[in-house]
Amino acid sequence: MRNTLLIALSLGLFTSALADTNIPNTRVSYKVKQDPMYDQNASMVFVDDSADRSGKTYAAFVCDSGDAQFLLYSPTILGSYAGEKLDFSIRADKGVVKSGLATLQHDNQTGRLSRIEMGYGVSMEILTMFMSAKNQVVIRVDRSSGSAVTYTFPTKGFMQAYRAINSCE
Image (cartoon, rainbow, N blue to C red; front, side, top):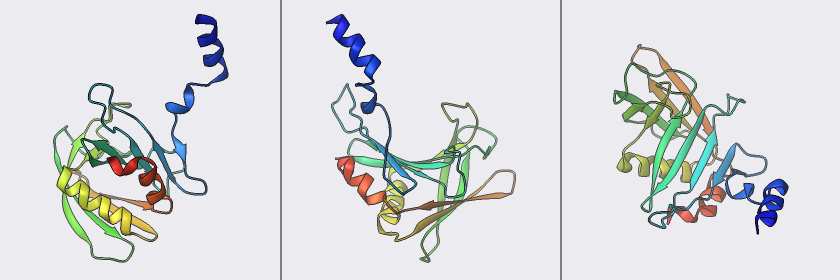
């Protein structure tokens, strides 16, 4: 059994469950994941910002108890302290601009104050915008320093990825 496991690991047979799956010719990827404690869908969809080729600026929809929570990751420091409320504006294609509040958090990987999250109600509105947009969703975050940062997320491939994670069900 141990030799079989070592062979499987060396061949990379177990890595596909941990790796993101890219939607070809898009800036969208997803990861299928199951919560081991509650057997609930904990999958994720990622949309990379169109201007950042490094992959460090992206929107994420994370499944949690059947809903999708929206998170935005940026290499740019967005505020002064974790829990700070930041104003944001969002627009799908050439539609109506909507505004709201986001909560600033530390990025778990970098430790920087560069991740914002939305409550579930707002997250569902943003999910609807990503689902209905034909081309892109633009988000502007007003940083506590007074300057704004604008992110553009192309939506081609988003619905394919969201269906691949069973729409968070």
